[in-house]
Structure formats: structure tokens, C-alpha cells
Image (cartoon, rainbow, N blue to C red; front, side, top):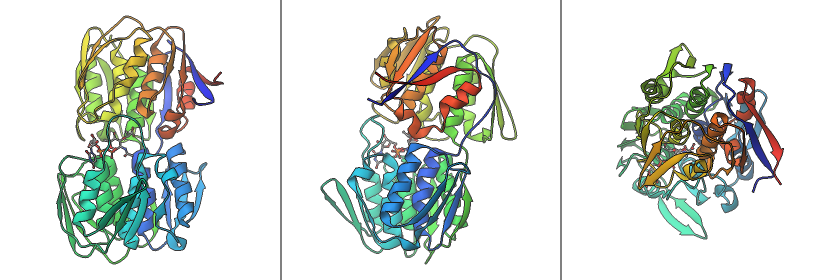
Length: 421
Ligand code: EPZ
């Protein structure tokens, strides 16, 4: 249990201007990818979140020189002093994205020993497609004491993923950029941060085409130089702030966004009767009428993102009617709804579908976060509810959102941290 809890007094509409931080999931891939370069890299617009701090520690463990200026959101990484290709189990267990060190270290040094990844408990999260890709490129694979051992010089080939997987698409791309010859990834993930990682690698001298489509072509190069790169804004934080604005019937402008990344969510909010508009990098969310119920089905990008399913289901607990939420990507991503029942939500879960009957009001209650986006969903429920909500184990939220409480407070939310008994 975390030493602090979040305390929210609900029913305060969010109004005003806020901004979105740099992307968590792109940063968690670009930072390990700097190990593929033979000169220092400067990564700009990095969010100061727990997962990025864990990567910082892992890079130091490998011997890289790292300076993370959190105030200026800039990390400088000099990989020239890396002495090890081993990421110990106690680090890799702390987050899922530690698996990107497999592709980066294997691609750069021809060897990698990385502990099995940890990550949010949202279902079984195998890495068989990552292994399939590394093996197809020519790596020998061994497993021992919770570690994954990879070794071999890599030769380009054609790899068709058995399902669309963001992690494996990026991880195998990392390994392939310096392989001998050409690699083609088919049935590849198209998420914005897949494109961002490819853009980073290309700016350092890689030759990658087709990122953002389901076929990515990579021409292996001898080496990658260093340079400076700015990561894209966080698509999921943007969506979480949009949903929070709608949930509190507020009027919010979110700056620093890429509106085209948000189209699936914007369409669903408009379907509910929420006013969503955008110009340049600003998205406005205003509530105009009550929330109509909807049917929501998570898909790979450009479909509705699974990471926004949980925040959205909080909003739907108060929609005027019956909504359906179908989670197609992960097999256990409804735990937050059990907590929301304590707040008066009416939900029936059957397989991969949650049937939500909107209620006029939620009541504040003590609830416990079970994962990152589920924690964000509980914050949104607390902002909507009458009375006080206490959220225990909010540390999950700090893993993926930079100063979420401060951003919400600046918009008028009554939310603060307190010591947890
Ligand atoms: C990434 O996870 C994100 N995490 C997740 O965000 C996100 O929900 C997910 O992509 C989907 O968009 C990071 O980027 C660090 P997948 P990842 O590989 O790579 C199955 C958050 O809240 N699969 O696209 O693990 C897998 O079990 C986190 O920020 C295999 O079966 O997702 C899942 O059902 C949560 N074998 C589906 O594919 C594999 O080898 C999609 O997984 C790989 C995946």
C-alpha cells in the first residue's frame, strides 16, 4: 500500500487551460533506443514520471552517462561508456517497457540479458511475438532465472506478427535497424508512438519506411549517429484530460496536443453529446447537454485506444442509459469497475464486455487503484462523485501521468495528497 492517498471532493467543474506532457509510451521506447547510437543523444519534452526515472536508473546500471534535467524535460544520454548488456531482474520487473532493452542491446551489441518485464496487471502479457522477431533475425534465445538471454549477429528478414502488437513492432524494429540487409515487418502496429520511435531512429541515420502503416521496411545500416529529438505529446494523457473535462461538465482547453491522434475518442465524446473542437495544437472540450450512452469497442490504432477504455468507462457510469464497453486488447482490464461499484456505479461484466447502466450520481467512497489507467479512471469517478473520494495506491498513476493532480487542481478540481493510514 502506498504511503499516500489522493483525496478528492467531487462535483467541481473543470474550467480553464492546461497542457499535455511528452508521451510516456514513446519516451519508454526512445530512451532505450538511444543505445543503438554511437554518439550522445538529447531527448526533449520527456515527462517526469516514475517509469522514465526507472529507465534512467537502468541506463546508469548499464554504464551509460545520463543527465536528466526534469525542469527542462531533457535527458542527455551518452552510450559510449556502456559496459554491460544485462538488465537485472529487479529492474525489468518494475515496468513492462524494460523489454525494449532487449531489441536495443541486441541490435547494438549482438547480445542482451534482460529480466522478464513487469507492468500493469491487465491480463496475461506474453512476449512471444518479440521472441519470434528476434529469433527470425538470427538471435539465439535462452531463458534462465527469470531472464531472457539473446545472442547473435542479426540478418534482415520478413516477419509477420500473429497479432497487432505495439511492443513487439517497436522492439523488433530496434533490433533490425542495424541488422545486415533488409527487414520487413507485416501486420505491424500503427500507433503514433511507433511512428515517433521510427522518426527518432531515422533522424539518427536509420533507414525505416512505412511506420504508421501495417508494413514497415527497414534497411539495415552500419551505425547510428547521435543528435537531438523531441518526443510527441502523450495521446493517452490528452484523452484522459478530455474525458475529465466532459465528466465534470466543464469547459477546458488542452494545449500542446496533436488533435489527429485523438479522433477515435473525439468521435465517441461527440456521439455522447460533448462539444469537442480543435485548432492547431489546442483541443477544447465543453459539455453542452447530458451524456448519451454509447457502445465502445477497443481496437488497435486508429481505433479506440484500450488505454482510454478505463477513463471512458468512468464517464459512462453517469450517461443517461445503457452503455456497452468491449475490451478486445487485454483480457483483464475491468478491475476499476469493481471499485466504482462502491461509488454507486451499476455495472455487469460478462467476458470482454462491461454493461454499464448510467446512474444520476456517483457517491464518494474509499477506493483502491489496481493499475495505471484504472487509477486515472478512479480519479475521474472521484471528480464526478458527490462528497469525498479517497484513492489508495495512487502510485500507479504517478507512473504514467506527470503531475496529474496539479493539472486538475489548476483547472478547479479539489484534489490533494494525504498520508495514508
Ligand atoms: C503497449 O503495451 C503499451 N505499453 C500499453 O499501454 C498499451 O495498452 C498497449 O501497447 C496497446 O496499445 C507501453 O507502450 C509501455 P501490445 P504492450 O504488445 O506493448 C498481446 C499504458 O497504460 N501480445 O500491443 O504490452 C498482449 O497480451 C499501457 O500506458 C501477445 O500475445 O501491448 C495484448 O493482449 C498499458 N504477445 C495484445 O497483444 C506478444 O508478444 C496487445 O499487446 C505481445 C503482445
